Every structure is written in C-alpha cells, then in structure tokens.
Image: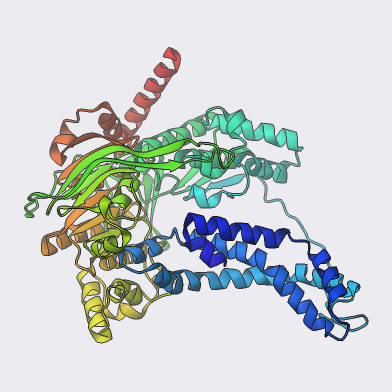
Length: 619
C-alpha cells in the first residue's frame, strides 16, 4: 500500500494515506480486548496474537514504504527510466522495489523492540503466549555504560553538500545549538542565543526569525552559510572546508568565498580549503598543496604555484581550467531551423499555506520564458540557483508538466499531447543529469541501465542489445568489459560517461545536459566537455547545456540564454554575450566568475566589498 500511495498520484496518495493514518491511530489494546471477548477460548492464542499484530502493525511499515517511495521516485535514475519510455508499473518493479527492500528490512528490525513490548502487553491480557513460557528466548544485555568524549572545539569542518549535511527534521537553529551545547554544556536559551549570533555573523538576514527555519526553507547559499555558522559556534582555531562552493552558482560562490576571507581576518582562524577549482584557490589561499593519488606533488605560495607551476601534474591541472576569456573552439556543425521552441512557458509550484481549503501562494519557478533551440546547435542556459534553469530543462524533456505556455518540438505541440502519445516522443529528447552517482541505479550493472530504454521500447534481441550498448560504451571512452560492472566501481567522470551513453542509446535528436560537469574535477570536466563536442559532430546532435559555470558554457555553446527569476533576460551568440553583455545581471554574473590569478582575485574581492559597503550606507 505504501508503494501504491507513493506512485499513484495525488488523489491515490491522499486516500491511501488516510487509510494508513487510520490504521496507525487505531487503539491496539482495545482491539485486542474486543477480540478476546468474541473469539472462542478454543482458538489458539498464539495464532490470535499473530493475527492482531499483522492486522494492526502494517500501518507504520506502509507509511515508511510510502516515504521511501516518494524519495526514490525523485531520483535521477527513475527520471531517466521515464525518459527511456518505461511505464509506471515497470518503474515500480525494476527501479523502486529493489531500492525499498533494504530500508524496509532495516525498519522491520528497528520495530522488533516495540513488537516485543506489544506482545508482552497482549500476553498479559491472555492473547498470545502465557507465562512462564518464554516467547522471545533468553535476552542478555551488556552493561549500559558509555564513555562520552568531547572532541573539543579547536577544529571544525564545513562539508561539500549542505543539504545532506543538515538534518531535514530539525530547525537550523536547533542543530547549531546542539553542537554548541555538546561542546560547552550551555543551557538551551544560551545555545539558542549563540545560534542566532553566528547566523547573523555569516550574513543570514533576520537571523532571529530564520533560526527556526528548516534546511529546505533555505537556498543553497544560505544552507552553506548555516553550515559555516555551525562550524563557528565553538570558535575553532582551524576550519576545514571540503569543496564548500562546488554546488553553488558564481554569485553565491563569490559571497561564500568573501565570507570565509572576512572570517579569517576577523577571528584569526586558519582555513584549510579542499577544492578542484583553481579560481577558488586564487581567491582565498595563501599557500597551495597539490596532491595526486594520496601524495603531495607540489607545495608553495599560491602566486608562484598558479603562475609558475613546476610539477607536470600541476601544469596539466592548470591548463585544464576553463577560462572565461579563452577563445572559443571552432565548430563545424551547421545549425538550421528551430528544432524546439518554448513560448511563454510558466511553471508554478504551490507552497504550503495552512488548511486544505485555503488558497496558497505559488512559487513561480519559470515565469513566461521564451526561447528557440536550432537544429544542430548547442544552446547554453546560465543563471543563479533558483533562476529556473533546471525546471525549464526538465519541461523540455517532459519530466515536468508546464502550468501554461507551449513547447513545440519538431513541429509538434507537446503540451497538447496526452501521456499515451507523449511517452513515445520522449525517445527523441533525452537528458544527462547533474549527479552521475544519483542518476545510475546502484543495484543494476551499468550495461543494464544503459540498455533499459531499448527494452522499454520493445527491443527483445538480447544479443543485439548487448552489442549496441557495448559499442556505445566504446564511443564514450569506456570498455566493452564495463557492461557487467556496477556504478560504484567507476570514477565520477566514468559514471558521467555512462550517463551520456544512456542518453544516446535511443539516438535522440535533442540532448539536454543539466550541469553535467559541476561535480567533476577540472581535468575530468575538460574530458567530458570534449566528449560532448566530439559526439555532437559525429552524430549531428542538438545540445542544450544548462550550467552555472560560465567558463564551461562559453566553451560548449554557440548561443547563450541568461535566466533570472524564471525569465529570459538576455540571449545572444556566445562571443557577443561574453564580450559585450547588455543586461546588468549578465555583467554581474560575468564579474563574479573566479579567476586563477591571486592578484586579480583579491582586487575583485575588494571591489565587491566596496560596492556592498556603499549599498549598505545608501540603504
């Protein structure tokens, strides 16, 4: 029932959810007493106990299964299966159920103590095993003593992914206060006050109110600031920041880097910054340590390392860094008429607003966007987090349904098609997802994942399928023997190559790449970008490349669209947009791009700080 509720749509979820809630709320003991009164004494009591616990105990498991299904259905590998043409039943059987098994078994194990107490209560009422018979065997427990060791507050850490690092069930303030209390023994009120203080210190506006917000109510940049606030709560002497800006757009990245630099100056703490972005290194670091395969290959001042690297590996890393001022490579792919047109597209997401009958506000993720993708070209879409880039990309491949507007693909209005006719058309529009880990089902071999769209579209020749997939794996730079391996056996760049192979297996006309290189190091980024360019020329692909990395977009794209607040604010060919931007927002984005030059990076930071001070004084 939990699986059906999670996959059945809004109405089915509501109805089945109420049934699950009713089962959970039903009074167990009253039901047991009623059964004891009506069931004949000759009926075996242990069997009666099993019946009672089975009838009443399914609600919690069903609710847990529903929650897991709702989580799994949002995974990129499920979205890829939908794009590959799989039906809901096939997705449930091949993608969702294997992922449910392990957490449901774990949940059942965690329910064991509660069931033991419940069984004891029923046995006391005469349902079940009667004393002195043992029902659960002899249970022996070890001593309950624990030694709690405070780690101290000298070293703190900021992790790469703020969303997975923060507990979604607790407010941001409670999580900061918990760290502070664990290390200092402070009272709750003092810990809350400290949480507000450090949130204000890292630039969270209206910290006294936002301290009670949960992580999902913060943007990506605000979540990263909250993690930094948590690390600063105990005033560490050393702050280790592990890729703290990888998932952030350029303007938020600049804000976080400026914040870290200001905190160093204000508190005197040391900063250890782990990153693959030499622009970030130039913005913050005094000294640089370059590592390869667990060993140090070069160490020295940042200015010397970035301008005169000595080790060949360091030189190869720096040469692979995409530069926003580098000339664009010449492409020999002609572009013709429009393959896809987006006309006044809107996508609104309802936001929580209280009672069910109350009208709620809507988040306007895409708000009247219009653009054109020409056949054979590469169109770049850039903008900050929350600008609507990914939402627009997912509507292009029909993973999201627009609120209003039109999407015309190859002369056909997709928004007017029913789902039955929309499914076959998805084979011509495929997607490469941002996270190469999340986009591959960990329980299936990569060959099976790449082959799934072929099977979903009716291909039954298993030998032919295997040959096709192995040939495609070779086309993206992998080996035929990789067919039978699992995703965890590959590096991040190799997993992204597998994602590209899956997107190409149906020979689509359009491939939408949603930030496909943001999680990769610079050398792997360059390899994937080069692979996409080669495949585009070989196969005549049309690409839509969504990213917040403006340097990479310049190298990939023929034309570039800039989005802000769900709208297209500027559109031009790549050379014109980067050399002569017209909109102030485009100029702001370009000014925020990190550069691998420590002197220029510090000058830019000083200019940003001066502008912020001026705005604050004028406000």
